[in-house]
Image 1 (cartoon, rainbow over the protein chains, first blue to last red):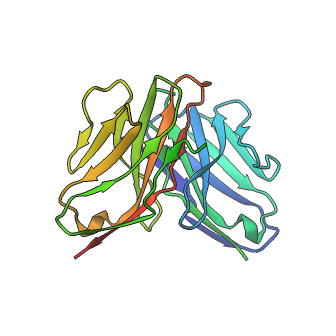
Image 2 (cartoon, each protein chain N blue to C red):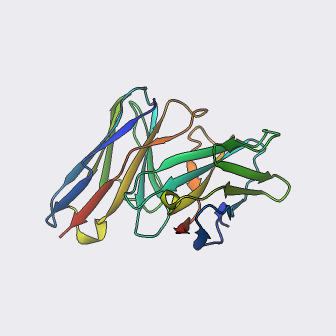
Length: 115
Length: 117
C-alpha cells in the first residue's frame, strides 16, 4: 500500500516552456503533499508544502510565481515550473502523507532538463 | 546549524560484510522521528527504517537496524550482510514533533555506499 505516482518521469524541453508535474496518491488520501528539488549528488531540499484546498507554503528562497503548486484534491497535487530556464533543470520529487502522524511516501521523481 | 549531519560522503564495504552509516541530529523537541531512506541511481526514495524518539528499543527491519543513542543524538544505520544491490545513496531524515502542523522531513546530505564484490 501507500503508493505515490509521479508523472512524467522525465521531461526535456526548450527554454521558456512551462512544465507541469503531477503527483498522485494511488491508494490513500493525502491531506499534505511535499515538493522537493534535488541537484546531482546533493540532498533533497524542500520547496513547498501543500495542503488540500489551501495555498501552498513555500520555503524561503523559492519563488511561488515560478513554481506554481495546486493541491485541488486529496489525491492529486501538481507542480508547474513556469517559463523554465536551464537553471531549473533538476530532479523534482513529491511526497504525500495522510496526516502528520503518518510517514511520507515518495514518488519516483521527475528529471527535468531544460535546453 | 545543521539539523541532520551525515559526515560520510562516501563509504565502501565488502559484500557480505556489515556497514554502519553515521547520522547525528539536532533538535530541541522532545517528540521527533528519525528515518532512513535509500536512493538508488534511478532516483526513487525507498523508506528503510523508522525510530521514534520515545521508542526504547532500537528499530530493526530485516538486514537494517538503527543504532539509536538519544543522549548522543545519533541514529546510525547498520546494514548487515551487505549485498551488491545495497549500493546507493542513503539519507537520514528527521521529523520534529511540535513545531507547527507541517512536520515535514529534514534530510541530511547523504552517504554514497558502494558494495564491492
